[in-house]
Every structure is written in structure tokens, then in C-alpha cells.
Length: 292
Image 1 (cartoon, rainbow, N blue to C red):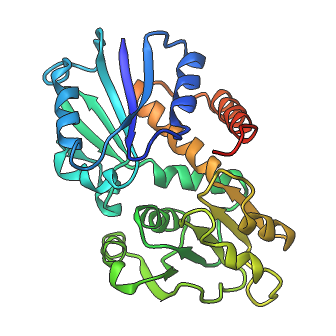
Image 2 (image 1 turned 45 degrees about the vertical axis):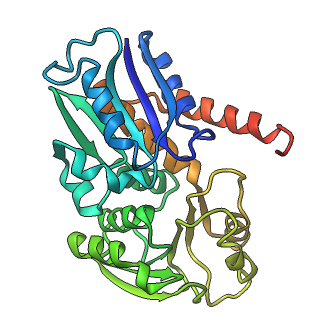
Image 3 (image 1 turned 90 degrees about the vertical axis):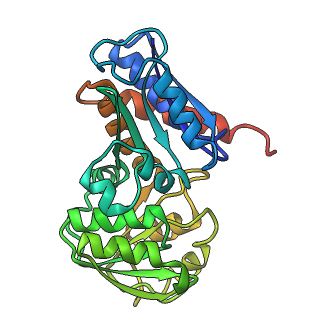
């Protein structure tokens, strides 16, 4: 049996187990399991060590056995905390300053960032491939990944709106590594007309932009809101009403998970239709539950 899991705190509402489990079923990987594990920064070193002790160090990935760990998905704040604990980190994860994927292979811990290719794929699927400019809301790990995604689709600069410039150090460092120019502006500044707008902030925090959607001088051409539940967000609804393309955080989650499945299983391509159907069915199920 091969094991994989998503780590984070809190983690109980993660959609990743549904997506990965659907992928394993579609691929015929009957011996594979994927769970959610509550884990904060303090517990991360010990948990990685326990994965190593479960037959990992010195054992080749090509010979799975009972209980062997194949990989881990990481949410914040673990994406940055894991970097010094890895044996090998792909250049993209180093540039972004965070790894959201650990693959146990050849007795080593390999770190990857699938948020970036996931974001590029989600935008491309919606027809967003060559924006004239971009504005990012937020300065956390997902904002750093957004900078790398913008570089991948041909941009060399972005406006980034932040609540506190003093807390943008990690993002500015990532921008330097990526070779991206960043124009820091206060949170709540007008969005440039025609920009691709990427909101990396929590649900509700970008609702003020929905109220400004009627301003013809500040209409984005497309909006990617990393929130996926509840959907559509007020920002996505306003964007669609103004004629902009609205891309859901579910699409980002789906595509980054697909890349994780490929990295952890070695099977290409990941079964996107099965993963998408399972994820949407779970979101529908959750939306019907009584509020807690």
C-alpha cells in the first residue's frame, strides 16, 4: 500500500482527499490512500521523520510496499517551513519561496511547487493566456506563486496591493528571485482597467471590490479568486456581470492537485475529468449541509 496525505492546520475541510482519492480510483491504484492530517510547523519535522521511518530512507520509489509514503501536500504555513527539511528542492519552489508538495523517492525528500503550474493551467483553461497587465491582492505564499505564474504567461511586472508594506518582505524577496518588478500599493487602491486580477486573500476580504465593479475605469479583464467555497464570491459575481472572465479557486486547486498526483504516482496525465467531477460533487454536498 502507498500512502499520501495533505498537511495543514486547520485541515479538516480540505478538498484534497476527495480529488486525490478520485484520481487513484480512475488510475486503478487500489492500494493507494490519501488522508488529511492536522499538522503545524512545530510538528512538521517529526511527521516527516515518521514518513522516512516507514520504509522510505534508502528504498526506491519503484518498489512500493505496505505503508510506504509516496508524498505529501502542504498548506500554509508549512509551504515555507518545509524548505530547510528537504533533500532536494526544484528551482521553481526555491524561487517562489515555498513548496506545497513533498515526494519521497530514492530515499530522499523532493520538494515541488504545483501552485504555479496549477494557476497557469487554470487561467489557460479559461482562455486567459496573455493579459496586458496584472494586479495581485495579498502578499502571502499564494501571491508569490501568482508572481511566478504571471512570469510564466509573459509578464515582467505586477501591481500588488497589501494591507501592510512591512509584511511584504517575503513577496519582494520572491519577486527578486523571479526577476519580476513589483509596484506595491495600499490595499483598496483602484484596480487598473483591463488587468488580470488575482485575489489571494481570504473569503470576504475582497468584497469591497465587488462594490466598485460599476466603475468603468477599473474593470479587470479577468479575475482569479483563490476562494472556492462558497462560490461564486461577490468578487467573481461582479466580475462576470462586468463582462470579465471569472476563474474559481477550485480550478486552481484541481490543476495543482493533478500535478501532485502525477508527481506522487508517476502516472501521466492525471485523470482531470474524474477529479473535477468528484470535487464538484463534494462541494455540492457540503453546500447542502446546515450551517455550523
